[in-house]
Length: 239
Image (cartoon, rainbow, N blue to C red; front, side, top):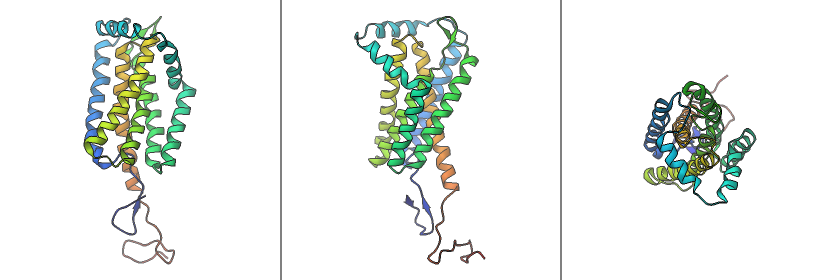
């Protein structure tokens, strides 16, 4: 818990350290571009773009054992794996006494699941016999989970604005990059589909954290005074 300077007011640790606010707003803006621009470029497509073919060729030439690892990573994006990932992440945040961040993990990844599902028929990009592919929900979910881990690390390390933002973005790139590579390796998504999923997480997690923190501020706890009564605004006690 964090004291606000007023002995009567105690607040929980925020989901996102205040020092990271400018960086998170920037990442949300970048995420919006990464999500919207490819959606406009590839809406209605039924095949890979030139950049998709080039990236796919590079991934196809990776180590032989990468395919098995890709299958293992892919499970994290499936309903059962995603649920367990979210529960484990929320539990980790609660153990670290960061309930607002735990709520961000649950609400944020749930919102991402809904958003990616809704966007697929709107963008109407298809792969393999007509399966909707944009954006990659697997990439979005794992990127989001990695961002929450980054926020937790930045808070625990008391990182400043630059270092903290770098930690969050580094974990996002690591987690999202691993899942994107798995999806491309399995030919489950075009490379640009995974870019849209990455952007979705960069957009949604900062917005969710900001919303959770605002709700926490509005519900600031005012503990009872020494006599067990809750103070009123004029200093008296309620009848």
